[in-house]
Image (cartoon, rainbow, N blue to C red):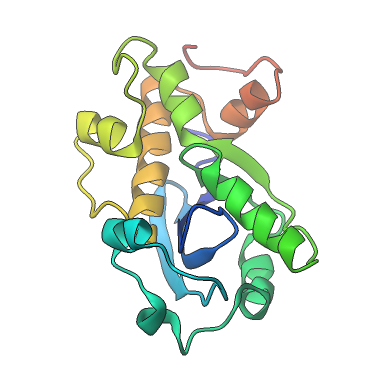
Length: 188
């Protein structure tokens, strides 16, 4: 199969504001295999909502000695600029871009792919209306600890790899489809 190299990302937030990032998980896939995992706790410099804490277990105490988004932004750019970046739904993209705007930082230059959209295209009638990461990953037999950013990023990346194998499309094919261009090879 062709190109199966990309990064997958997931974020957890302190409250309902997507830019209140408190954890970032990045998993690097090279030729379809996990090469690297990174978990970064981030001090969102905002209040934590008890609902969010209940979901992911991260609170003010967990991030009090962690860097803020501007302090981790350079590492994110070093790892991600110029790459394909997978997230499950557009939430993580809105969060990363929102945090960059909030702090007036340069936008990370990536080609985004949404694993929920890929799953819908690869298995259009498989999951009904349930396209959550837990639903799709569970249906594909992907085990993970939900709401841990690295685990969610890994699961989103594995969803994409399953879709690539199922359809015969590689990352370049999915990028072409996401931009409205015909993809070469594979079943659509």
